[in-house]
Length: 396
Ligand SMILES: Cc1cc2nc3c(=O)[nH]c(=O)nc-3n(C[C@H](O)[C@H](O)[C@H](O)COP(=O)(O)OP(=O)(O)OC[C@H]3O[C@@H](n4cnc5c(N)ncnc54)[C@H](O)[C@@H]3O)c2cc1C
Image 1: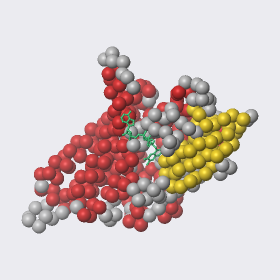
Image 2: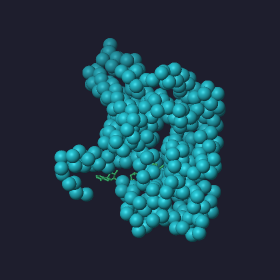
Image 3: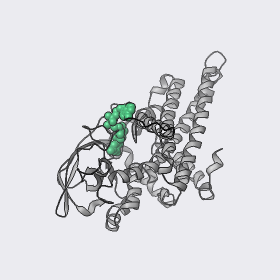
């Protein structure tokens, strides 16, 4: 079944990547790295990045279709360090796609090239504490034009990877009198600009993290940037955001499928080997068999749906696959959470420890049901699209 979407191009790539992840990255999954800050492992990961480059596996997203890269993303998702080691981690991969498609040539030279080389990192600042992120047309951050500059003021939070990033792509209102979806623009703000303040790394489930693996609260106080730092047309911020989200959800979903496969493997190994002291193994119990069968069915169904959706985006574009994108986002985030919960339960007390990687996935991926559109927003928009085709004029 896995071979259905495997093209000639990735037939040889995938085993290479899988082998690298297993031999070079799995050994890094020691308690010190899984519970400590990312900066502890960053140095070793930089060495791994050099190996990836030497093997010709760096930045594969640029040469593959979305459907092909989705399968790479699954292979990388088997380790929490996979995407970073291969130069395709969020949010940088989304910013690369954005700049590649919409930035001017000087912006590409200054920001895109070093980002693609892994020489710098970036972040994407849209969500604000004072406004519901589920309805992002409401933004308090403004970019007011003064001569050749924008003057930016505002408050953002949950800006992933802002700690140590060279620049932020900031969503700010530039055209307050326009229609709601035409009010905002996306503007590059260097993080060393005067008035750019990283207030804190927000503590999440007991961990405020650092470097790439952190989520910051930011303030913009009269930050001045050249008008040329705008990406795309003035007022096109939401159009650009939509462009970014379609492929981004494929990357996330396939990463979660990779994580689910990894957890499934750990779960089956434990079920097959844990001696229950009564002449049976844990895997002899029917309830455990039920979880294993249900998990297998769920992973394989989700993968088919995501790759089908990726293939559709490759051919018809993200707008045509909107309903499918909502479906896979909901299914895959839920899949990972359910499987990791079963796996922890199967491991008993051990499942709660950092001797196995399960608790890491649990802590770090609970957010899957919130980022890039919450479950509820995706379900509501899917149902509305369906009901509209039945003639219902759906009220807000
Ligand atoms: C770990 C993490 C990383 C993130 N990284 C980034 C980042 O890099 N950049 C960035 O800009 N943002 C980022 N975010 C923010 C994320 O995009 C927002 O949290 C998300 O859009 C939801 O917005 P909100 O938190 O304001 O929730 P709200 O909009 O306040 O919604 C709260 C809840 O209300 C419910 N709800 C909302 N709308 C509806 C509806 N129509 N019908 C029924 N129920 C509804 C949902 O259950 C939802 O969870 C990140 C968030 C997390 C947790």
